[in-house]
Amino acid sequence: MINVLIATQSHRARLLQPIITALNNNTLLPDTITIIYQGYYQSVKSTVPILFVKNQTNKGSTNRFRHASKKGINITIDDDFIPSKHYIEHLIAFNSDNTDCIGSLWGYRMAGFGDYHKTWQSIESWKELLQDTRCIMLGAGLMVWDERLIPISTIQFEKDCFADIQIAHWALSNYYKTYCIAHKGDECEHQGDDDIQQNAIWEQAKKDHSYLDFKTNEIISIFTR
Image (cartoon, rainbow, N blue to C red; front, side, top):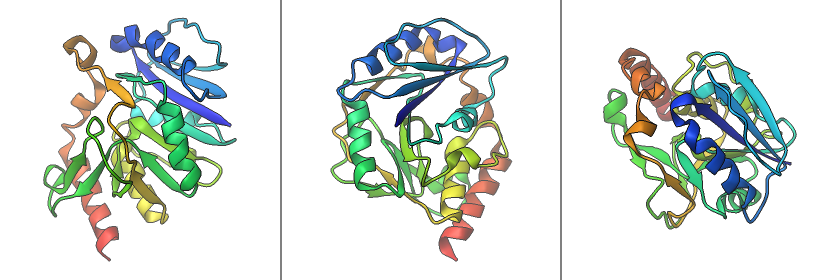
């Protein structure tokens, strides 16, 4: 069972159908696609069965994980990425060899000890990565995991946003390994247009320095004890 999770925001609505079309054209098709509408709704065309979640407001990046399929493997795709035709196949290949791990096409190393901005150094998803690389924090938007073994849907998220750091804290606390997956850099294409990135909820939320710093220091405490 393969389920793809997409949380979509109204200012990125024009990308939704191209994402769905790309998933329908993948070399390995998912069994289901779950679309989480964050404060809006639009119809889409798909030969792959779609499960719809209609939120009246934007409930943040963590909300998609509450709707993960409990029957097997879940893959996320952020609503500002267009997956390539081998996106699913690539993530499933990692999962097949690492069933008890969480993987993502981007991740973060710990670069120091301090506040949120001084601690984390990203491993960028659009650059080639030659080998699977252990990391502490994953980019939640390009993830793969088996919910039967790693029940991310059960996380009691404290904040609607900051899925990356909250999942990192949970995974580290529960001894789950996290990896930035080796990749060529052509598994998906980021859409960075101003109209796509405007009013992104994470841009507003990242002003919450106190929470980010608090969670970072909790992770450092767990990691170094």
